[in-house]
Length: 226
Image (cartoon, rainbow, N blue to C red; front, top):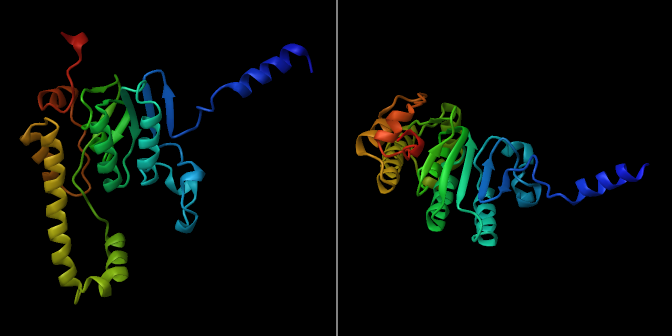
């Protein structure tokens, strides 16, 4: 091996392993992209999950990962860049609380949909890169998932039959809708915009225009447009 080739290998080995990771530091930005798996070391072995199972989803493991990174680099990070199709909504709410606590700005690169919007709206300033889009929809629950949940939790929850379970699902749906509306209102989004999201039909994804989001206070106006 030639000396230049050996030197190149050493230099590459010394660089931070930022590629193909869910969280990446880039100057003052923390980039969060759920196209990449959760780090194996963060997954509880007893959960039965593999890193591949976490690809594409905002995961509960991301809560502590985000908190630890911000605690370590609080003097450096002021912006969280988001690319995600969504994931576990309760994990998103917990991460949103951390974003608010650190006063981070948020920005979208590519697509930020479903639970990702919960993270996005927690930013003190909210930008969307050109060509990006944000997908919004009400909470939903698929038939197979509902059936499995009912079978797993019927005895412990005291549901006499499917009708008792349906009553609980209805109440839970109302709580989810109210929580989403409250979250958006608390971050300065107009009531009409927030209510429209929870009024969408099941399985409907709404991609509002940049102008619609700016008018509703969901997206910070682009200063270059003034």
